[in-house]
Amino acid sequence: ELWYIVRFRAICDPVSGLNCILVVEQNISNLKRSQDLQRAQEEFFAAVSHELRTPLNGIIGLSDSLLRMCESSNLNAHSFAKTLKVIMSSGNRLASLVNDILDAASLRKQSLVIRQEFVVLHDVTEHVLDILSPLVKKGVSMV
Image (cartoon, rainbow, N blue to C red):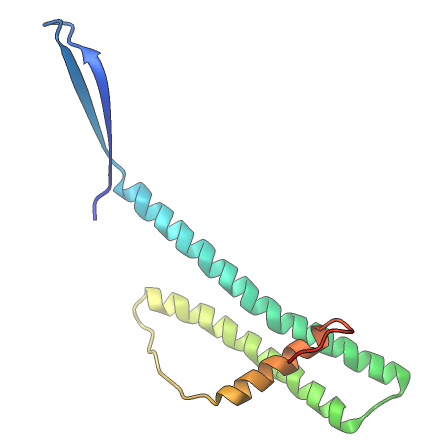
């Protein structure tokens, strides 16, 4: 794919004295590809940053919740275990995201194998709600 900038300028021919149009053509294909690559990288890093931030905030919020439970001696074994599972799951999600970044590098080298998996949407939704629930402000309910 080739990209060009074409500029037109009215001039007076110094030899003949006739009015002419000067056409200047500039190949900007490399610049366009560079801009497209930069845009794709920016979108990738924005998505990765968001994806990393979500489980990190979950880990921080849940750890804070566990710390407050320990300090108040209000330990409920079931909720404690559930919170630990969510922290572990968030850590696993972070590890998965790092693997995704490494997969992106493999994709550039054309050595990535892609596979499809079936997921239970209800389980995924429950997992997301478990991660986000400690971040919800008091007085706000998640439906």
